[in-house]
Each structure stands twice: as C-alpha cells, then as structure tokens.
Length: 396
Image (tube, rainbow, N blue to C red; front, side, top):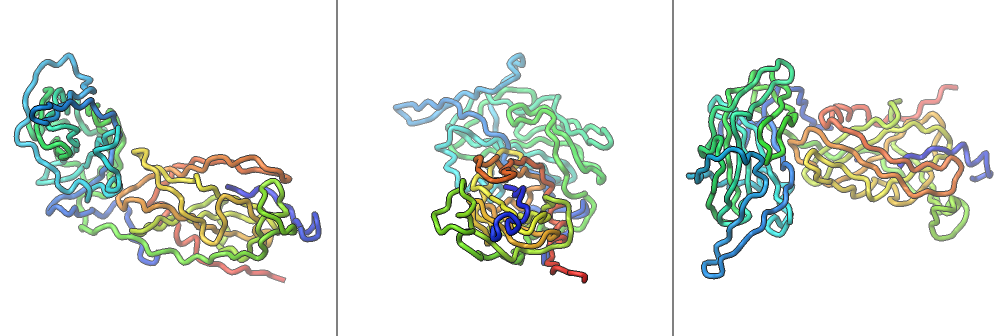
C-alpha cells in the first residue's frame, strides 16, 4: 500500500479502514440476550471436515460417524440424552448467517464462555451433519480453564448432557445445533485472560481467551460507533501529465489527488477503528515526506479474525483502489486515509490486518510492500481521538 518516494515531482519534471464510543477497559460486562447470562467471550471456532453422511434408502434417515475422536483408548460409551438445541445460533454468530452451512464441506466448531447461576459455563456448539452421529467426544478430566495471571486452575465440574469421559451417540434433526455444556467454578473477578484445555474437537488445547469484562461491574451493553467524519480527498487531475488510460508502469497516467485529511503528528502507520452495523472503518495515519507522494491500496487488503474469517475491503474513502495515485500536500503533513471493510462482530476484540505485496512497477523508489499486523480493537477505538482534523499551521 504505502507510498515510498516521491521527492517533489515538481523538482524532477516541473509538474512532475467516536462520537459515542463506549470505553471498555475491563470494567463492563456484556449482558447476554439470555436473562442473567454474562458473556465473557465467544467464537465461530475452527472449521473441521464434514464426516461422510450415509442415507438409508428406505427411511431417508441420515447417519455419520465422527472422525476426530482423539481419545480412542477410552472405551466408555453412551447415548446422549436431553441435549439442548440452540435455536438462536445465528443470532449468537451472525457472521455465519449468510453461509449455507449444510452445503459447506467444513463445519464450524463454535463456542461461548459465560457466567450463569454462579458458575462458568463453556457452551460447545455442534451442528448436526446427520440425524444420528456416533463416536462423538466432548471432554474428560483434562478439561480446565487456567487464569494466565494467577495460574489458578478451574477444573471441570460436570457436563450437560452427561458425556464426561465417554464417547457418545446423539440423535437430533439434521441441521440442529446442539448446545453441549461444560461447567466450572466461577471465574475470579480479576480474571483477564484464561486458556482453555482439553477440548480437541473444538481445537482448544491451550487456546488463549481474553476475558473482556470483569465480573463485578455494572451491566452495560456493547455500543456501536458512529461513522467517522474524516475529510475525503478529491481528484485534482485525472492524469499527471499524459492523457492516456491508466498504466501502472507509466506514472504520467496516474491520478493526482489533493486535500487529504490532516491530523496531528502520529507514528507512521498508526490506526484507529470505528465499528457500525453496516461497516468497519479503519483510519491509517502517515507522515507526508514529500510535496507529492504516490500510494496504492489493493482490493485484496483484508481483516481476519481468530477463526480465519475474512472481512473484505470495500473502498478507500475518496481514493482509487487497485491504482497507484499521487497525493499532493506539503512535506511535514500528517495525513489519514480511511479504509472501509465488511462489519466486524461487535464482541470481537482482536483481528489481523493483512495487506499483500503489490505487483512491481516502474518508478524511482518503487515499493508496494505488504503488511501483516495484529490489531487490538479496543486500543484502535481509543485511538479515534488521534484522527481529529488538525489544519496545517505554518509559522513564518
């Protein structure tokens, strides 16, 4: 993406992604839509291969044998009874609402960590690939939560239904989402991060989980941001000096932009984020080293969450995408560009910014380098204040 160059082209040629941001600093608790449930964290989870499904030609009943047991030396077996069916799965995980899960070759192994009735509950969701699934495995005595600050271990108390240390068969309607529950002692009020062990089918063998909110706090729902009102640049010239179709190898055909959003000095690459129900806005701050610099932003820039789900870029406000362009300003300016992505789930706390390296091109100091950055969403929301408009001040 980044510009790298341009001494003044004038010298060379003569022309030449919060008005109401909620402060979430570990002192607020999200109140789940389910009364009395405090939600600490949740994830769509890993995706695993769908097992082979067989259909009885006489009854049309479908069956499947689960293929990821991992505990084959344990011979205890049972049939799970009175399994809870989660009717609100798509409300809990709206990011999969548009996925045709029955047609996907992979199944999401989703989970949710809550506090209910003075116990910590890990909900492990399993979408039935068939009417009957055999050889399932949930948990054993290995399962625990470990507080990463104190080392305190929260050992498993029980499961619902009772499948502790057993392989099991379950019967339900194909497509139903089972809610398999694991119970622990209530987390300490000081818990900030725990690791979950002993759940191989859900990919949790030491997975770190951030406890976003402490227990002893006022229940306040998460709140969306408003759309950031950053100044949008405009096209000053459709071509630098040659009225020809855009050619990345000929910088005389690149657009010339002006009037970028100015901010106070920040470290190059500083980011801020705003989340709305419709989109995610990521502002990136840069220092302008030259009167005219070139930049580029590709369509393959994306945000990726811990499950691997991608949130694609939609636009760069006021700027071309998949084109190199010039921005005119003044050396010493600090400017901000706003990238717009698909909306992130409100409860998401971390994600990764991925910008692949661009195609090589001909220009002095040419550089379309890539970038991979881990992002702390709350910190980026706190950075919103850094992107207030700051007009250029010239002292003579």
